[in-house]
Length: 316
Image 1 (cartoon, one colour):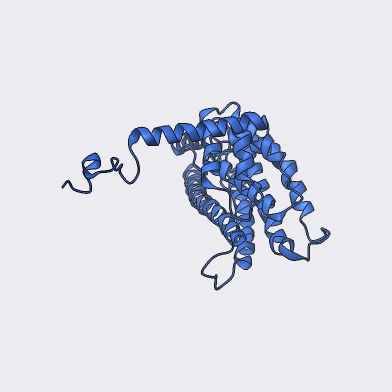
Image 2 (cartoon, rainbow, N blue to C red):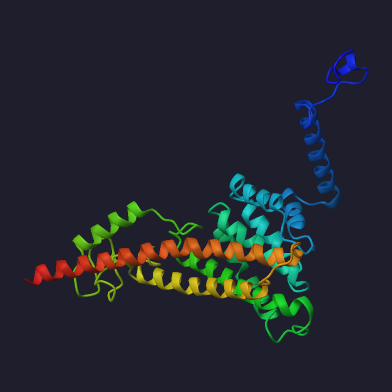
């Protein structure tokens, strides 16, 4: 008699592998994609809008990773249209009804700002009014703020919205920084060196590259004149804005830590997982920001020392 794995020789139909054959998997995937397309057509929603609806569904857990990943990927695939379309779709979500939905929407916006294409950051500036609205609505004066899940999540919503607003303003004011706070250090070093060589020391003004010198007091080698526009990435204004944003991150982290139980149950509650998801995003933000702020502060100190040494040599 044949072996049990011998397919038809064993008296039965062939046994597929545990995960199915490659054609079967491709067929199942195509069928699933076809169902999603039909659902979108019935709902009259675009691919981005459907992904937003699914990511912000009114369930207590965090947004499903596959839905937020689609939005991030779309921002890279179609940088001219997808970021704006996504932000508009997120703005249509009910931000003032459920604390769970509000946190899911804010965390989706945050994930896009962290991982999306560079075009997401300008699009996020359109959300400044929404951040302010969310912050004021879920504040301590809100009706019913002392009851149920609202009393637990409202402080986090307020702190989180303020942090995201600070991030949006930071990137609007200092466009050289990418969403992970990196910037072209080579160009920064070259411009700073040019400014130090071509500038006049101790006067707070410079003739090289249109930059303002004079160490920290004069604005640093990367602080541009008011007529020229915003300060560069290595400048006291940039460092000050980074410290302000860092304080917002710390406040949001503290609030999230106070909400989560010290001894979590074996089966975590869904809204606990949502709060933990928000805390993780904020922790990543704080980590990236801290590394960049340390670099900017160290570079400013080095430039200030160089300016002082050059001024001393000139005076001597």
